[in-house]
Length: 305
Image (cartoon, rainbow, N blue to C red; front, side, top):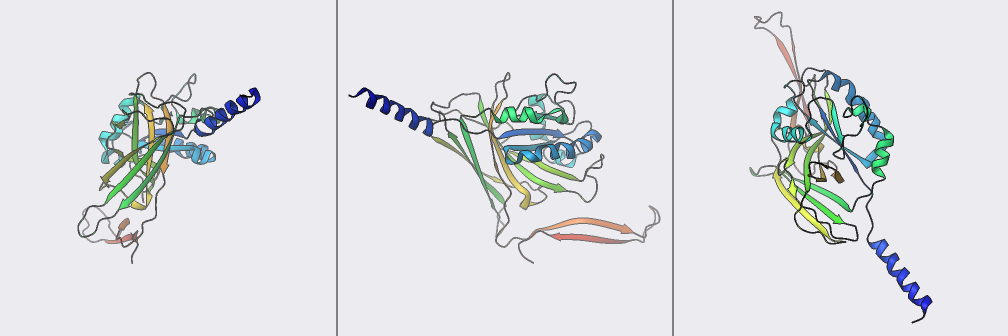
């Protein structure tokens, strides 16, 4: 065989291999631990949210409303087990607090886990670290009729885009139902906050996640599917989304190697959903006064009148 032709074939095979198998761009996960009972959180959260906005879809944020410094946050009270598991997992003992891809993001600073100590250069350095996998997430709301319970169907596709098998018993798929935006007519607890974003509402199937025990061959895709009831405490179905991420559960690592998100979807079809916006009570002179007036503000979140 001609030497030039042989070299051409080798280079072609290498080029095709590189095209078929490489590394995927990374989507960063920010896990933010906050509470509606935490005064510093009220000051920090808007600033940190504005800081992350320029990164767009390259950064996915999930808020864990917790019990620090005291209980009283209604979103924490609605799902104590899942939040508590993640708090214990990272050893969180202060708020506000955050992890970036499972890691402490500001080592060497006086408060290495404080969200406002995360820098743009650090996030850019994480974005430069590619991943051997891609994660695509999709969800559908299955709204019940004839007495059936409302549920959610979630599909997570993990594709191995590297040139070697993906197998490590320490990897766990974490899947979280989030509520993109929650607004209260008055402060949710005691720190004045009325507006919350990307709040974790339920970990599927639990905060223990789903172990990835089988091997995903180079170029192959593993599909993980769930069908779960929608929690009764959800404020708005139209704000529901899903965040999925693969994390190394090894205690010395805890690195999140890739993240995917399914954004909230518009509700279609016939569905009735009314929300109580506020209650205003007037003409009540004191606690013993039995004569008063009130007004209710009701919002129609339905697809029907």
